Amino acid sequence: MPAGLGGGGKVGLGIETTMGTYAAPTVFVPILNESLAYAEDKYYSEQIRQETIHSDVKSSYYHVEGTVSMEADPTNLPYWLGASRHDYATVSGATQFTPNNAGSGDACPFTLSITVVRNDVVFGYVGCVVGSFEFTIVDGVLQVNMDVLGMGEATQTAPSPTWPAADLLGADAHRVFLAASGVSPTFSTADVNFNGFTFRANFNAEAQNRIRADRQASYISFGITEAEIESELDFMDKTDYDAMKANTTRAIRLASTNGGATLAAATSGVQITANRVSYDAYDIGLEGMGDLIMAGFTGRVIGIAGGDAYKIDVKGPVTLP
Amino acid sequence: MAYKLEVNHPAYPKDFEFNLDGILVKNKGSVTVTEDMERKFLKKQRKTIKEIYGHSEIVKLSGTSELSTEEKKGGES
Image (tube, rainbow over all chains, first blue to last red; front, side, top):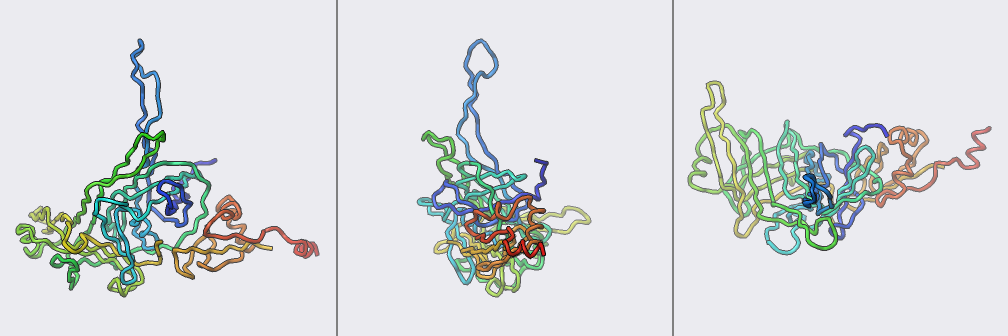
């Protein structure tokens, strides 16, 4: 077999009926890169037997971990967000994901089998969840980087790809809004001073191995949910600086839509709404004689009584089970 | 004779278009694979349509790419 290029690869997702039992892919995802890998700490015996080199090795517990980066595409994004610590429901024609912070019961609506084909060689990763993710705008296009954890790996048969056409969210799709925090914040005019936008959610996922005559992970646990927004914007007034000092929480929304100015009117889109954000830092400085005066901030997304800390609405063709 | 590819994807709406390794098929619809399409597929994928789509849950493959007796006779005339 000749050497292959990354462009010839493919990644497919299958929703698992039973966590950790392989489901053949039904959705194929155009990614930018991935690094899913078999992760194991082998046991090297340190028997003392008149030698100063390890004398034996045994296989140990393992799991799957790695990253997947891709353009945020409504034609497949719901599958990833549904395999994360969310609940989901259909709201106004979009699939709305809200964090599941109950701390008990099933954390994810479903788990994924991820099939990766590298140079025509098939890898099947099972029991996969998205442990953290980051939406960010790169060269005007909304992208998402995800950390994936899985229970195990097995070779599978070659999948049958069905590729949807790409539906990217470009520079003319994005609007950022600020408002007073609330269960349903009232956003009015878009703020036009933002230079970049990053939303992160980290569920502090860890693979857990238990003694059960099986080397793959028993399950994936979730810890504290840490969500934050990071950005910088032209410094125009002290409204948000004062909010940081006074610990006044704010609501921040990124609306990325195609075919309409609002998600309701759009044909497709992704809308991230943080209902209650506390500014961790709001830095303004005179960086240099020729530098623009910018405000850089990091905001921690926190819970709100009677509502959700954040919502991610995805409008697209996908109907999740 | 020719292969026929049908797509029936429960998560996507009717008429949503899928690209099956170069062959465009709408959801809940079908396409008859011409000899030229099959040749291009083989050249690009280095595998036959049957090898890739013969075992799919989403894509149903029917028919055959073999020439019928009548077609063979037609080719000889």
